Image (cartoon, rainbow, N blue to C red):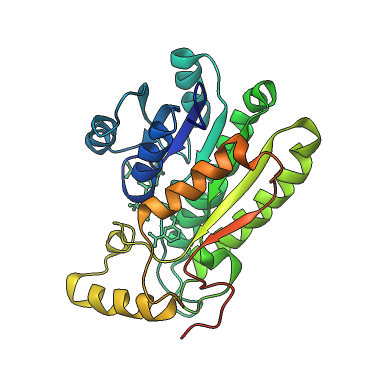
Length: 251
Ligand code: NDP
C-alpha cells in the first residue's frame, strides 16, 4: 500500500470528493484526520472506512487551522500529508457579483488553505511530506459567470506553484488536482434546484471532450498518487482530472 504509516489530514472529508479521498487513502493504508463542520457526515465517512485509523476533527478551515494541527498531532504524533479539499462555489459574474459571497469563497478556497498549509508545514518539514490541493479546471481556464470561484482557484494554483518552489529544496512536495465537473452536493449548495440541475449537468457532460462528467473516485485516485512516493519527483504540478476539458477543444 502506497501510504502505509502515513498520517494524512483531509479537509472536507464529510462529503463528495473529500469522502472519496478518505476511502481511497484508507485503502492505501493511510491514517486519517477527517476534517469538516458536519459531525454526522464525518461519522458517515469514518464508518465507511475499513481497516484504518481515523480521527474526526470538527473544524472550520477558515478559522481553526491550529486546532486541526493540534488534534491531529495529539492523536497520531506526526503529519505526512495535507489534502486541502474543502471548498465552496460562488454564483454569478462581475455584474451581479455579491461581494460578501466573493469574500466567503476566497476565505474558504484560498485564505483557509493558506492558513492551514502554514500551520501544517513545520510538521511536513520533519516528515518530508506533501501537500495536495484540490483546485478545479476553473483555476486553469476561465468560465464566464463563475467569477469568485475561478479567481479563488486560479490564485490557489499560483499558491501551489509558489509554495512548491519554496519547499522543493527541503523535500516537501506541493501539487494540485484540477477536476472537471463531478456530481456532488457542491452545485446544490449554491441553490441550484432540481429543474435547473438537469440542464447544468447536461451542459457539463457536453463540455467535456470525453462526453461525460467525472466521478469522485477518479479525483481521489489522482490525489492518492500525488500524496504518495509514487510521485516523488513531482512538485508544483497541476494535474487535470477533467476528461480533456482544459487541454482539448470542447465538443
Ligand atoms: P461538497 O459540497 O460535496 O463538499 C465540500 C466539502 O467542503 C464538505 O465536506 C464541507 O464540509 C467542506 N467545507 C466547506 N467549507 C468548509 C469550511 N469552512 N470548513 C471546513 N470544511 C468545509 O463539494 P465537492 O466534494 O464537490 O468539493 C470538494 C472540492 O472539489 C472543492 O474544493 C471543490 O471546489 C472541488 N471541485 C469540485 C468539483 C465538482 O464538480 N464537484 C469540480 C472541481 C473542483 P462541511 O459541510 O462538513 O463543513
